[in-house]
Structures are given as C-alpha cells and as structure tokens.
Length: 616
Image (cartoon, rainbow, N blue to C red; front, side, top):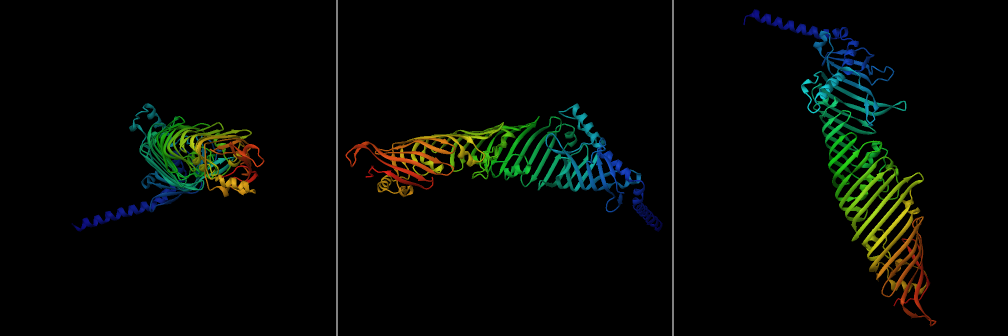
C-alpha cells in the first residue's frame, strides 16, 4: 500500500477521534446551555401527565452514561395547585440520549427516583393508590387504547394500539404516605423496585419490595398487554405477593373496567390465620391461634362477587375440597360447601367463627364482634373429625354468622358408638351476648361419653341417651357456665356404674365417719338402668332425680353441684326396695343406708347419715 494512502488513513482516523473528543467535551457545555432545567421539566411533564418542578440546577454526567441528575423534584396535579405533590423526590437520575441532546432534544429511557415520597389515596375498594394524571402521553395512550377496545371488546385490533415509548422507572429507598385525619401517615417504607415498559403496545413488568406494617413484602406484576388492561379490556395478568405472614398469587386474565373482572388460578397460604388478621388490621379477631391455612382455587370475580370453584383448602394440614361464593359489600358474604376427609373442628371454628376459646385450649374472652363484620353460611362434611379429645365420623355441619348471630350446628355425626347432634349459638344483643348450647347424644356408650366429658366416677357404662340445654349471658367461656340456665337429662339401659365398690361403700357407712369416694373406687356395680334429671340455674345444677337400679339395690342422689366453685352438696341413699329386712326393733320396712356427699368434683367425700343395708 502506498505510504501516501497510509498517511491519509491515519489523518482521517485522527480527525475522527478529535471530532469525537470535541463532541464528548462539548456535551456538558451543550447540556448546560440547551438541555436546560425547564426543558427537562417540560419533557417529564409531557411524559407523566403531572406538573413537574425542579428546584435544583441539573448536573450533567457524560461517563459512564450520559445522564442528568436533578434535585428537589416534585410531580403535582395540574388541576389542584393547593394540593401537596403526588410525588416528591430528593433526586432524580435521568438517562439521556447524547445524539438527541446534540439536536437540542430531551429523550430519556430510564428515570431513577431516589428517596421519593409518593402520596396515595384510599379508594372505595380499600386500596391505596396515587392520584391519576389528567393528561400526558400515558393518559392519551390509554384513551386511544380505550377506543380500540370499545370498537371490538372481544378481540381488539392490537395493531392500532399506540407505539409511544415509555422506558424504565426505578425507585430507591422510597415511601408511601396517605393523609389521614389531616396528617401524613406512612403506609409503606423502604420502597425499592422498578417498572419496565419499553413501549405502550408491548408487555410490562413491575417488581417492588418494601416494609408494610412491620413486615417485609415483595410484589411482582406482569402483563403481556398492559395498555389493553388499563383501557378496560381483557388481558393476561400474573401477580405474586410474598410476606412472612402470607403469600398470594394469581395467574389468568383480568379487566380493569368499571366492572372489574378476574378469571384464573389463585393461591393463598399463611402459617397462621390469626397472624394474618392481626397484620392486615381487618378488625376481626379470631378465637384462637391456629396453624397453617392454604387455599388453591379457580376464581371468577366480577361485579363485587368472587366465585371459587374446585377449591382445595387445608386447615392445620386437614385437606378439603369444595366451592365458595364471596359477595363484597358493606358486609362481605361467604357461602358454600366444603368436604374433608379429616377435620379438626377447633381449627375450623377458629378460621371462620369466634366460637372457640382464645389460645384454643382454655377459658378466654369471646369476641362476638366478628358477627357484625361478615355474613357466613357454610355447609361442611367430614368422614372423620375431632373436637378436642372427641372423635367423630360422618359429620354433617353448618357454620352461620349474620347480623350479630353466630351459630355452629352439627346436624349429624357418629360418636361414642351412637349418634350426636349439637348446636352452639352466640347472639349479640345490646344488653350483652346471649349463649345457647344444645347437645343430644343418642344410643351412646356412657363410659366413653363420661371419659370425654372428664367424668370418671359413678358414670353409667352402657347404652343411653344424654340431653343438655344451656342458655345465658356470657362474655368469657367461664362466665357462660357460671351464669347458664337449663337442664340436663340422661337415661341408660343395662350396664354398670364405674369405679364403685358397693360392698366396701356400705361397710364404710356402717362403720361411721366420713371417707373419700376414692377409698371405694376399686370396683364396678352391675345395674339394670339409670336415670338422671337436673335443673341448671346460674351455673348451679340442682339434681332432681339421679337413680341407678341393680338386681338387689337402688342408689339415689339429690342436691346441688356448683360449676363455679366445683363444690358438692348432695344427699343420697342405697335401698333394697323389694326385700323386707327385719330391723333390730322388729319392725318391717325398706332397708336403707343414707349419706351425705360433700367436697369438690375432683375430691368428693362421703359422710354417713344412717345405716341399715348390709353389704353382704
């Protein structure tokens, strides 16, 4: 190659390098003279639809990217000059196009908001959202897309959608505030994330993290046709929300029109429903801290109504299937059916009603305000169920909450070798909560029933029927039984009285002096039948009739037993009604041994009154 050509090539390359160097060197000067602060503010206003004000002077950086650094930036509504800014940012970093800057234009693809404060307002649906701009390229694009959607809602012509560019918006160390009672209240802090939307007719994603009510949360949203979605048309939508108390996801299609519509698969899970309700500040206090809750369902939502089909639900790892219907309004209404293989009734009641003690195992104050915040009508069935120590099978039940009334009914269930029906009802009235408990246990094993009820002494072991009706006021679980009125009755056929050595009992009564019932509990007395009738008044049971008949003896009791103090004040006797025994004085009459029962339910003692029945 001739040397002259080489020299000319070197000169050309050198000239190009000089030109590039001059351009790079001139960019800050060009920016400072042509890309002035007002020009950037105008472009940001045209892009966002808000009135943009920049108090600080822009600083231009060339390397490693050409960008403008703006300070004290505010975005406000054009129509309300007195309202506080919708967005305030200590700093905004805007990536600029160098070639556009040389032409005197402002073109940027990325904006980073550093320590922004975003003011949001509470919508009628309960969501906190920022004010909607009244103009700007985004608003105009949505208006154009709305016309495309209205022309053919079923299949809009996507080729007619605007193609304006949008870019990326990043936010770092931000927060959301809302005006409550005239003061700014922080809703969300430590807000970080970004929104990516290259062009109006392309897909868009949003990823954000922050701290909400003391918990770290993460949100991811994506749509293949976001402009159609904002314009009120149907578009794909995926959403994922993650936090320690709960996670939620949705994958399907949605419409953001006046009649909001969702159709897809939704999943929800939480390690503790009580923690979720406390964290969400829903104003509903559950009755107990239950374990995990998870729901997976096909949902269809429109017009304030959500239908859950093919719903898989698990409460404390008790899986079930069914269908639910949720109507949103002043008072949400939940109805539907659920079927379980196994079910812990305590967990079920904790999840849907306030009808179990706080902590799930002991007395506690009952929060009946639940019944003023939601309407509930659920039908459920379970092949096997537990209620504390009680095992049930083939359960058919209902849970209903409406207008201050909370009811849980088991209309049919197998237990204790027989059948049971029970009802628990709370009626919230101005004078206080009224409680009603009903139980009918038919053809049951009395021994198994007594063990489950915590009664092991003098319990008839045999087939029988038990009826319990209790009514009264109640603020706590103890006060229900302390103040209840009602009745208890039971009848049993042939069987036995457990833990009663009758010969030893009679021998102690003949000897005189009081003795503990435990001293004569090493036996069982065969009986032909037993009957019990008691009246409950203010938590005190007055035993009207308590008789057990065997081949040779009749045992009876009467008196009172207190629930509050667990005290006993009973009189009783053992009679040989069909045998005329000769007394020491030669007279004929029934041979009877009478006694008094005192002490407490757990430690009863016997004090003889008269002696006359032989234990031989």
